Image 1 (cartoon, rainbow, N blue to C red):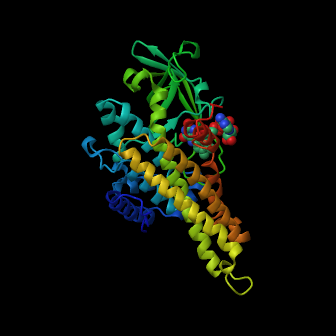
Image 2: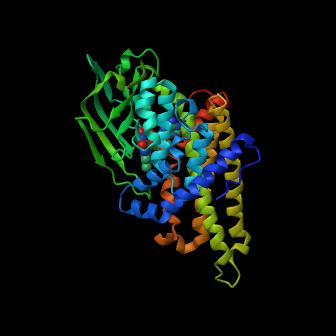
Length: 392
Ligand SMILES: Cc1cc2nc3c(=O)[nH]c(=O)nc-3n(C[C@H](O)[C@H](O)[C@H](O)COP(=O)(O)OP(=O)(O)OC[C@H]3O[C@@H](n4cnc5c(N)ncnc54)[C@H](O)[C@@H]3O)c2cc1C
């Protein structure tokens, strides 16, 4: 599998991305799409996929070399997610773990990096991510989970929902209030970001029945007076929301990679099918009505991909890359959805047969329009931050 990169990708990143794509070939051989789908159908996990990532050294990418990783920055993370997704095996836990590590690398202590980030390289630690609550989806400011200071640390009570991989992860990166709403100095203050050991007493999981094809399950996670030590807090008390915001651009780019990889997978399947399916004697791919949606999806995905790698390079060079990250997530998720739609149309009735593995792409690509952040909120960002329109 070659990356076939846009010419705008810097020379120094090209070798990195190509080597990631080659390494992912081995991972896909060890854990192919068929097994990914089978595990998803059984509501099981993909632990061998994670082990294959460890064995290929791919979990070390994105952690700076001077801190014990393999370097590669966000460009490396993006390439890992894109290549896995192109192979039809995108691990949701990769996006969650790489994002959570970023927050700890930026704001955690050396000890927290030793304890939580480095063990992810060997697969000893998997991290899930807890922000969403039943009454606080897009509006995270409304979250109610509270961490009350105690002599030895904090006592956490509340509930999170839609927490992916909570059964596989050993820790959750949790956003909780540390000050009641009335006592906050600003909109984002009064929150803490915590690394919480999921085996602590008082934590209960309830699996949700989510209709999509991924070998990670989603859970309601209940916290009933969970005692956590003081060193569970990442950075300063009160700054959790700001930390989260400053790590979100990393997440948007990785989500774009996930969407675009899946869109490419769908497009390739459509092109192969259009070349052989011939109900009127000639392949349906000779009809422009079949070609054009596929061609349009190709162009739009390439445009989003160029923006995605430019955003990753910008982030790696020290800018926050907010504009590019938001635009890449928006364009990438939409273009990939168009590719999946075009693939369904091209496959006709066969698209709906499970074994064809086309309709199986649709729920995931549809979720990526909504989670982790809906595209309307991205348009809100672009309206306010890029166009200067009033806050809605
Ligand atoms: C499969 C899956 C996995 C997930 N994994 C995780 C996870 O691991 N951790 C975690 O914390 N969360 C996770 N989530 C939750 C996800 O982040 C939320 O679903 C998402 O943030 C949207 O919140 P909501 O569902 O409450 O939608 P709501 O906030 O209720 O919004 C509903 C709809 O209203 C519209 N809307 C909302 N706000 C605005 C606005 N300001 N402007 C314009 N339109 C708006 C959008 O169209 C949106 O889709 C997951 C969700 C799914 C489906």
